[in-house]
Image (tube, rainbow, N blue to C red; front, side, top):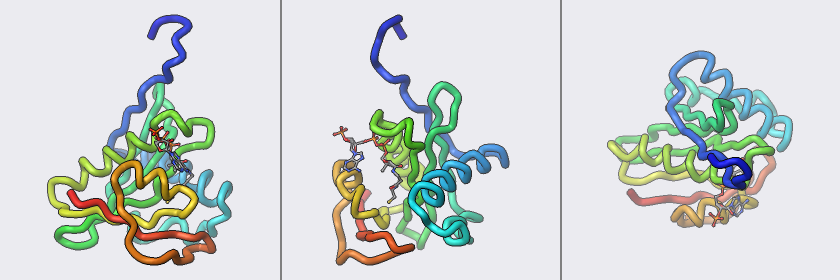
Length: 150
Ligand SMILES: CC(C)(COP(=O)(O)OP(=O)(O)OC[C@H]1O[C@@H](n2cnc3c(N)ncnc32)[C@H](O)[C@@H]1OP(=O)(O)O)[C@@H](O)C(=O)NCCC(=O)NCCS
């Protein structure tokens, strides 16, 4: 990058491939969902974490975001736990994470579902996800189901 450029460095998104990577991903989730949003820690980590594909977004070698992809059935993937640390929001990290999740699901999934917090509904809508059904509460936070056909 040229000196004085205001372009933020592009995020690099990759699959978690070591216990250290997973620890970094879980630390981001704890910071965002438990400490920032008040989700109970015992609900944040669940059994789906054992068989999910976890992704880690890095900027300049620092872990700044994470998400996971769960295989629900033969044709449906579920993206969840999408989190970007506060200081790195608004510069494309979440977008890059979502597109990387879709690449992970694409070989076997026909559609992707997710439960969007109502306050970030617009983020997923911009990515092409379509709302399905009514608002519901999960961990005291309003959510809405959304789907993307692949
Ligand atoms: C939601 C979240 C993952 C978005 O990540 P981010 O890195 O800030 O998003 P990006 O910078 O990649 O934004 C991509 C696009 O979505 C838009 N966007 C981002 N957050 C948005 C929001 N809350 N509402 C509507 N649009 C939003 C951006 O403006 C951008 O659109 P543009 O390209 O037209 O400018 C991040 O804010 C976050 O971690 N929030 C706390 C955890 C959370 O709520 N996770 C979602 C659980 S369902």
